Image (cartoon, rainbow, N blue to C red; front, side, top):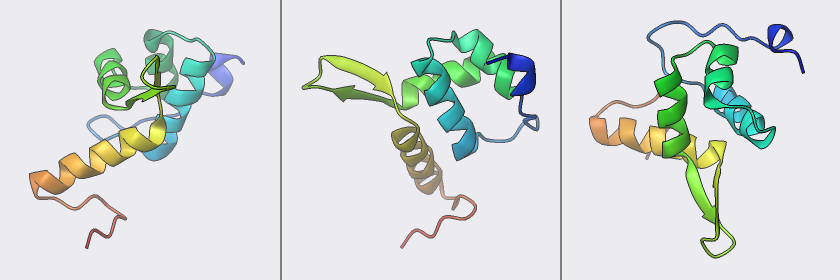
Length: 93
């Protein structure tokens, strides 16, 4: 897939959306580097690296570590909850 056809426009200073986390997951499965992923979704390289770190899960009894978008989103929502803010569109009871 050509990167120019799939570039999303991310507004500077905003948090990642779940859809962008899914793009990161898919591109990592396609073996793209974090640098190319950052260019594609329009964020800084460190943002992608931090997100990959945040969403790593261990599979197959801890033998394989992979990035998954859902745990990354859950970690983001938990961090926002403990910070004192409620993420947009999330009802935490």
